[in-house]
Image (tube, rainbow, N blue to C red; front, top):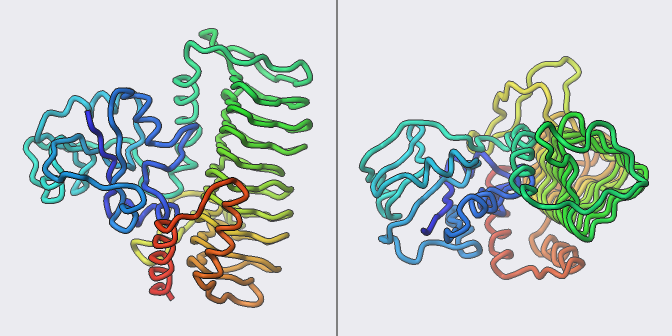
Length: 398
């Protein structure tokens, strides 16, 4: 079976700035990405991503538009029931929600033309907005944990750690799972609200306080004295410190120092400096409005808690402060005192008091190449072309 996880245009815009640089199926929700969940549920399937046009050279596109395959919206976050429902579709059958196709068994030409046979009107669990990542994360994390750790043995928890709550659940399953190579010492784990997943080669330093459900993906580091609350996912290759609550930090990003981050999503290759504090609640307790790229305006969310949404390769300097629900694009560099505006387009540099200026693409690429090389990852020509497109798009927002 060949499965193609495709991005609807509206979903792509609603999930910016995180979808600027990746297919939606590569968003991390819970412990794994959406693509990895499909691979887990359907281990014999050949799984491909089909993002919007400007990302296809980097992430793939159909070789044969007439080939019959199973197409699924990359925004659908599967569980076992959703996977079984979609796999059961026969040739020509589609699942739609309003005008939005969520799954189709057929060829790409028919999907583009909406040439369906039997149509089933129903909704599926999916990402509609960027904040759905942290809203869904606690429940999906627990689902991932149970699937990933089923019928496997954890590495032992060293005696220097303290546990609050039971080490096993009511069905006898472990509430802490430690993969090989992890170094976990002198930490307090509270398991009353959910499990703790500690990935391969993770380091959790002494003095950390950790509440489940929470996940540390491979090669991540929790620095001394970190206070890490449930509903959070870190990694892979993330350094985290200070106080973090119900937040998802994608791979290769760092929030290594004191400061508060809550109800947030942080893309890849970001750095949050020492003393950065981000509001996630308005002083008047009113519902939050968040910048929506598709609408080109601030949209109602009905949320009371929402922290920053930060695109890839963005940096926050020492002691930067962010207002509630600040949206930061790709390649942004913020420093200095005061609160910057609550929407900062991609490739901007500056401060609340000094104003912002454009970051030339050449300057950005030099820094990005340097940052990625520290992890042994090369910046490709495909990446450079993607950033050129994002820069052009950001220029039209001014």
